[in-house]
Length: 222
Length: 219
Image (cartoon, rainbow over all chains, first blue to last red; front, side, top):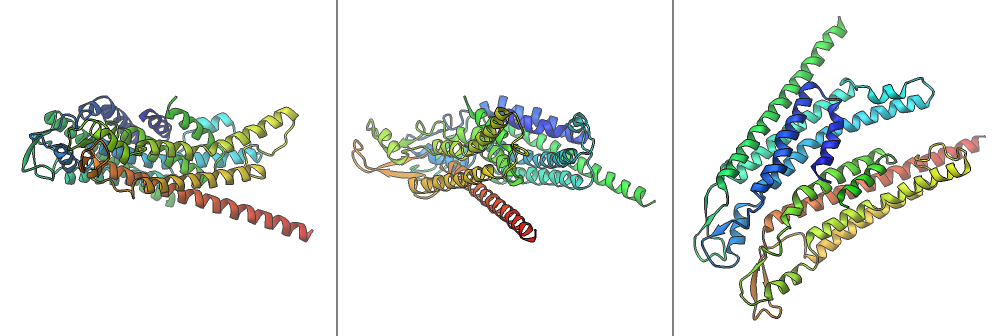
């Protein structure tokens, strides 16, 4: 069980997404999940071991590290990716529910081809439109919340080289040095940029869906 | 052998679950298993190496770590996930038993072997009760073993061979506490889902029973 299982889940959703939704899924997998697993995890891998404080006082390093990094970037990104992917499951569940209803119709004797049923692309209209639009809305909210949490927790998106710490049991103000600050800043900005792109894609998809439904309404009334 | 096995098991159960049961499976996958594997495991990875005591006495750190962490949070978490997912096996076995019976007798004995009625309903209800029971047991265990769900920065230890009361520092206590609270929140959510599913099934089948009796009386 790892990110591959998430990929299998979301891969199923791909069939029923709009084109913008498919692009969003691709960006999510390639530029976020893959980068996280293949690169970012290694950059943060040794973060506490190589967090060095200019003191021999035992416990000072632990306490200072905990003070400056209440929750590591890498864990926040993992949580962000999980939360941002979850709304897509709502769509998958709704599609599965619709299929089940059609299956039951078949069971009641109506002639529906089973193969057609499984390959059929479910069109985004009616209640599914609402589920899909809500899922995009929640994705946007989660993205924004996590970006804000990052900004608030780490006073911006830059990783400093030197931190000054005087938490007990450090005997006085002690210099602590973060490992690989430049590389970490680079990845933080990269992940931030890709989050921004994903937010724009979600906004575009939301606008597209709203315009599509508005254009259909006048046609119905005329 | 890894968490993939549990994944496959739960996917198998999904087919025979109610709507609430499917939500439960999704929550266990996304918010418990995936968070455990992708994030939580790494936080506790070097917990022993990074546990530091303010003493040079050999053996003192080992003894203090063992005293304060008889079973590590992360291992308890893993055990909880396994125990909570296992009762679903009862349902899978029962459905397989039904399907085998049909094959053996070479005739249709059930309207649908996977439909939750009769004996399968009892099995399903038992599995729900067991799941809820295990969740509560593990939450209580966490609470009792670690005096609540807080993780302190500093622990005072005076077990032999430590020569006196020694300050010991845990690594990443805040991050561990955040994930512990996350674990508790998802456990509670799963308990609520299990209880709702239990009430829903009991109400649905009581209603069915009552209606059947009423129809028979009318006849």
